[in-house]
Image 1 (cartoon, rainbow, N blue to C red):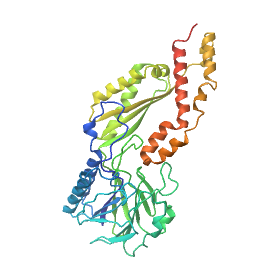
Image 2 (image 1 turned 180 degrees about the vertical axis):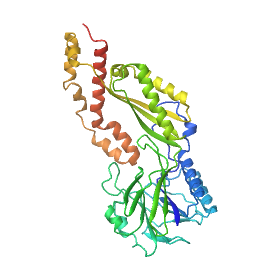
Image 3 (image 1 turned 90 degrees about the vertical axis):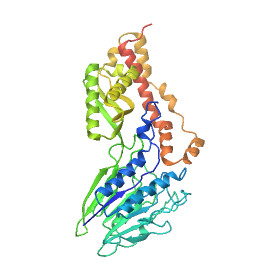
Image 4 (image 1 turned 90 degrees about the horizontal axis):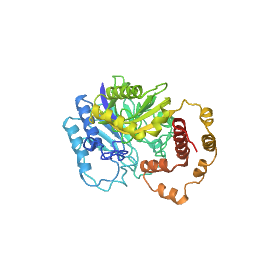
Length: 420
């Protein structure tokens, strides 16, 4: 009977992060990725002849640096207006009323929901009612879903909400609510925003995070886009397909080197994984973190010659082409197949070094806690930036770093040994 698009978390003009390690990043291909993802959404809406579009918050990443961000979004809404497609949108924590200081009038096909209280808007020609509320401030700790209006009879009721739900790991609390709270409203579809991972929480009723249209860093891997939802004549959801919009796809690629014994086999295994990922991306630029794992006799050389390893992988990427693949980083997470007892028995010095590596000498480096003043400064930063910094400073990461140091020392002993 009708079709609509559910999207959220565009974070328009937000830069892609984690590309500063090298100066060969394909900047021209990456610049404006969030804008191009929104353009892809508009093309999809027009080509599919959808009946309306929903935006569940965080259209913008924060206050505009200038009016170009707002003008770009407005231009896309005009394109939808010219195609006769209405738009219903709410503001989230990144583009809350208190955050955005500049404004532009949007075309009259766009309904923007109040931040003062939840409200309902009917579609002009369909038995559809969209209920929603925008965020007044960046922080909304209360359960605003409880105040959404009751479902209207003989209509397809949609709840447009920016929320962290409850018990969602890795996300700060915004407008927390439970699935029971949402189901209690008797809406047929809840179009949620804020959680960037695309996921269907429930199908009875439909409770869906569309995810963001464009991943912005290596923690946002895989296809990103929107939901294309079809509703039948009985006002039941027929399908809610995930449709990719991203122009850049972040991916963690695991290469299993178990039992591989020479560099030729190693390169063949890496090349195979890259080829499969490129094929799956179907023309979308892939930014990949390569993780080598498995027990292999190459473990020691991989640790000791990481610069050469990375250069070899970057050369493979050059052969594929920068419009298809760019390597963000290479992680060596393999394990050895040598016998520590045999290595220790070589000579007294080698045995002494290995024994010290099993002790607490290196561990003493991680006994200090993060200073309170650092924690206070971190608390003032935006969530996404704070997490990246905390990941670098977190004491829980240091044991892993020390384990890597131990592995490199053992690898040197295994390949060359020590002598007095």
